[in-house]
Length: 191
Image (tube, rainbow, N blue to C red; front, side, top):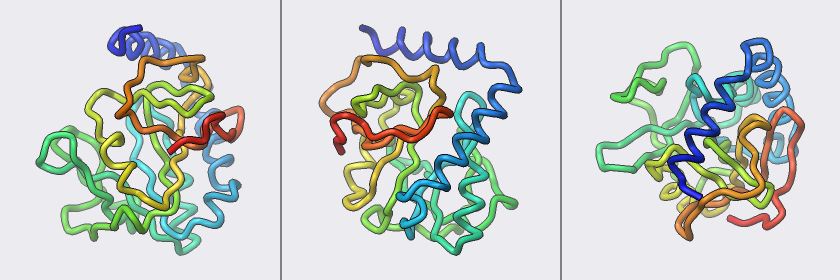
């Protein structure tokens, strides 16, 4: 199984979702996130600022901000494949990084990975065993091991879930998987 071919196949499945389905699924996924024990009990939540083809979790991030939680999102660094957790204080004043991804303004406070309780993790593909196939740059594979107390929760549409994926030993696993069908514990519950 070739990672590149699998990524293309999953992207095609996502493209086949219509806007009404995407809107409905995003709403359902956000609801599953904010009603989960992991979210409710977490004090420091790392999310992401979704782009087309990813589940938009802005609603969950706003709920976390409204609850007084510390919220952070990835900020891409100059070093190849490296990111840090940048504190998000509002969804209103966002810039764009060099890749065109929404990001907090440059003066955002950095949140230490070891302080994060829950990482809402995007990706292209997921398995019920907790395997995650990202977009290919390895940002989360390098970052998640540094989040020593965090629980990684994959966020995706059901069309992104497969029985198996071409993964390597260095690919970070997730412990939970959240889709429009609900939140499930991954069988290996790995980290």
